[in-house]
Every structure is written in structure tokens, then in C-alpha cells.
Length: 107
Image (spheres, rainbow, N blue to C red):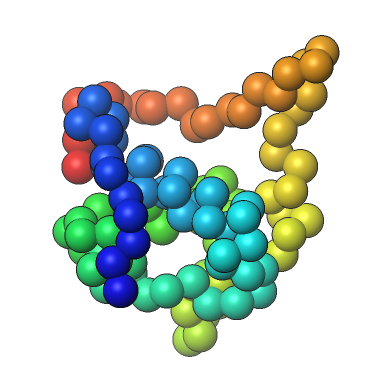
């Protein structure tokens, strides 16, 4: 199955892929406590390399959206784990992303 994913050439592909998967999780398309599609399947769905898919899944894990269960696979984290990641500031919400340690590595 191929999904509609149009990458922005100005950004990192793995970050865009992770953001798209995050949006699918928030929209309920990918359910909490259910398996995330495998990295190979994600690579095929998004039409990216396996390395890019792995990097995106690793980023989702760092952000708390997925968790790895040994001998079982990668699962979408329970809703509470990522539901309140925004910090309200006035009437707006500001989302924080991890700092890029090295911008020279592009996938």
C-alpha cells in the first residue's frame, strides 16, 4: 500500500516521514498499543530507503510516540505518553523538537 506523502526538498526526509507518522498517530489512524508497521513496510509505503524509515522510527521512539518491545516489535505508545507534549503559551501552543546536533548529515 502506498500513502500520499509529498516530501519537501528543503527538509530532512526522515523528519518529514516521522512527522507524517506522528500525524497519523494523533489522528487515530495508527492506534495506541498496536504494532507500528514494520520498517520495511514503512519504507515501501513512503517510497523511501530502509535507512530513512529506520531513522524516522528511531526519531518517533525518541519523541515518545512509539516503543520497542523486545521480541515483539515496535508499538504505538499509549495515548498518555504523547498526548500532552505541547506547552501552552498564552493562547498559542508551541511544539518543541529535539535540537539538531549535526546538520551536515542528510538522509
